[in-house]
Structures are given as structure tokens and as C-alpha cells.
Image (cartoon, rainbow, N blue to C red):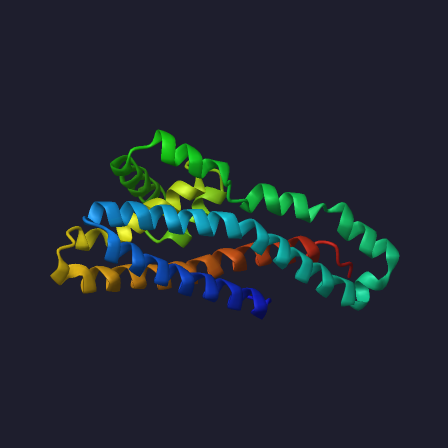
Length: 206
């Protein structure tokens, strides 16, 4: 991914989520309670931060465009702005924060797991990054926040009992999930960057 500062921000976010998840596990009486709380914490944070990541990435890429010799021609730069990529990217890759409220109010915990499994079957993968890319295509209609919540449930499902002796294993499963998800979010943002670059390439004349 082009923006190294953005990668650093995302890494810090997932480190903070790891600390939060451990606190949740330590204070939850059951694994179901822990997983529900971790699902909400991760989905809320990633959903809320994602729009800022898109804005930061777009700003960085526009600065890169302005430094390009080709776009120092005002006509070429105006052609770039006419692409309206900011709006297109927002429409195509936006995480809807409001969808998380719908998830919390209208979808039972076990139903999230079923939705995630169905999305995974449609996408041909249970990796959250793969499902996100598939969701972006418009071929499945599940709120992205629900996909993230479902990914948490799937990621820790192997440790669905949390007596004291299993908390270490449960924490290990959560941390592996968060590490995998960090990489998949980076892949998702690389997808956004690739889309931007493909649109810009269409403007270059031989």
C-alpha cells in the first residue's frame, strides 16, 4: 500500500483492539458474552475509522497525481477531477456506520454467524478480506459491519467456552484473528488504491 503512515495508524488501531479484547475476556463470565462484546468493539472501531482511512488515502493519492508531470497540464488535471473519484470510491468502498445499529437491534447473535457463513459460501472464502471484496461487487447484500462481527465470531469459535484454564487459548485465538484482519483491511485498502490507479491510467494519452 502506498501510504506508510496509514499502515502505521491501522497497526496501532489493531494493537489497541487487542488490549481491549483481553480486557473484555478478563471481565466476561462466558465466552458468548466475550465474543459478543469483542464483535461489537471491533466492528464499531473498524467501521468508524474506515471512512477516515478512505479520506486520508484519497488525499495522499491526489497529492501524488498533482506531482505527476502529466497532470501539471491544467486540462489533464481537470479531466482527473471530472472523474469524481472521491464520490465513486465512497459509493464503492464505504463502510456504513449506520448498519452496525441495525445489526445490534435487528439481528440475533447466532444469526450473524449464519449470515457470515452464507456470505463466505457465496464469496468462496471465509476470510473477511475476501468477503469484503465480494460484498463490494454488489453480489451480496450484507452490511459490512455485520461481516466484521461475523468474522469475530468465526475467528474465535474454536474456543467457545471460557473457564479460566481456556482464557489463554481464547486470547490467542482472538489475537490471531485480529492479526489476520489487520492484513485483510490493508488488502482491502490496496484494492481501493488499485481502483484509483486504474481510473487515473485511463486518462493518459499515448
